[in-house]
Image (tube, rainbow, N blue to C red; front, side, top):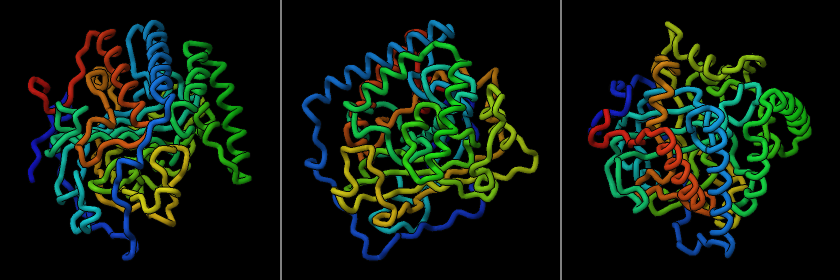
Length: 392
């Protein structure tokens, strides 16, 4: 299988895979992942109303931010920190239950990687919110979901925490309204609040308490984004099975960045740190493991409750691919903003074998499409999938 090279924006150069790509392990020999059943998914009676409210809230935030900045950005994860060309190498020797969908054969694909941070504004990094990464695998053959008839991409959206702040859309409406109330207001005040929340988060971590909500509000420790492990938080089909994905540093140079603090008063600390890493003259290609965690127990690893962390002791995170990013300019002020304005990352850009599951993913399908439509219309800039006719 020889996928054609990516052709979106400046992402045209194919990458070679260096040494160090090894076959994945299959986990415990007696592990038996559950097969998907439609009964595992069930919408609550008020789900549609909650999704409609979320769509209204996030579009209003995007509109307010667009009026403030003069251009429309994403309704969430608006601030791009890096836009990188990459290569995804599916590992050889995967056992049958792991050799599914995108990972069915040990193929190599060009990819685009975007590091970002929320919310809908271009906030200074002193307002330290969660880190996020979006991965777009290009020219992927295979049957697609009906919601994604165009393009040949497989997208993965991840943040640096294993669970979502609420079980589903209904619980998230209140959080979204609180977030919307701060849009466009006093960035300096947000930096002060973020500092206070980071202190509270550190205390909670010290006593072993959950601090997910504080991190979402701006209490994320100001650490280097390349040292983080990222999670989809929500499940997807994995062929006949169900799974969550994660992306973990594999190179020693990345592992060394885990927990490393960034300068507190640098407006664009994350951009500068990522650029410095990839611009280093002696830097080798950085590598991450793309891992899969299969559902083994529907009660302990639910599909519809995104706030429940799947137990890694019950189902380990198993590597199925390597993401390789070579030295390059990670963010170019003259090029990157335009390049990312023409792109959209969406979990519904997907093969049928990896269809998104659960209420949060159902909400994303509607809210992200509305955000994408507003952004394209406001900026008068069509959004394309790499590999579409006329996209270069």
